[in-house]
Amino acid sequence: MSISTSTLFVSLGSSLRGLSLSELSFPAGEGGLILNSIIAGASCLQYLSLYAIVGTRRLRVRNLRNLRSLRFLQFPVEDLEITGVPFLENLCMTGAPLGGDFVVSSMPNLRVLTIHRACKLTEQKLDELILNSPFWSHFLWED
Image (tube, rainbow, N blue to C red; front, top):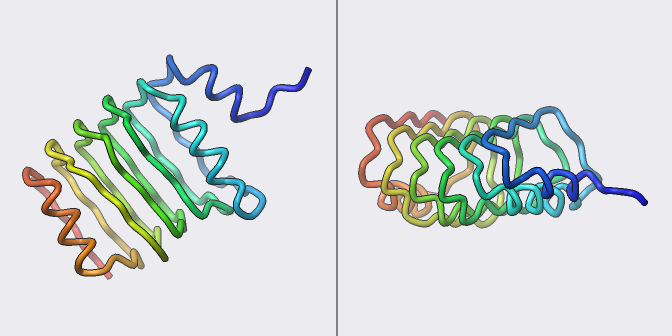
């Protein structure tokens, strides 16, 4: 019997508090499926960091009520959704160009927002992000 990596992570997901993945490469388009299934199964996740991951077109960070810190570093993704993360305090997107859709929901506890190097956010999406995070205390934007 063979167990896939995503199945293994999903089975561990209920106890995971932190997950940091770096320098991974997935076959084109499959990264999103694998990462989305890992994230969806990690209901207690408090810290998520994704660094230099290739092969992910769509990423959904949904309904992680315990998530406090979310970091995307050198992580090109076309479509990104961050919803259902009411206790998120730190959001960092560094060198993570967004080429397509970017969906965010209310993040009332966001304290630190860092957007750095080549994040392709439209003014409208940046406004939406800021409006959905009324209590941030630190904001860094560099083009």
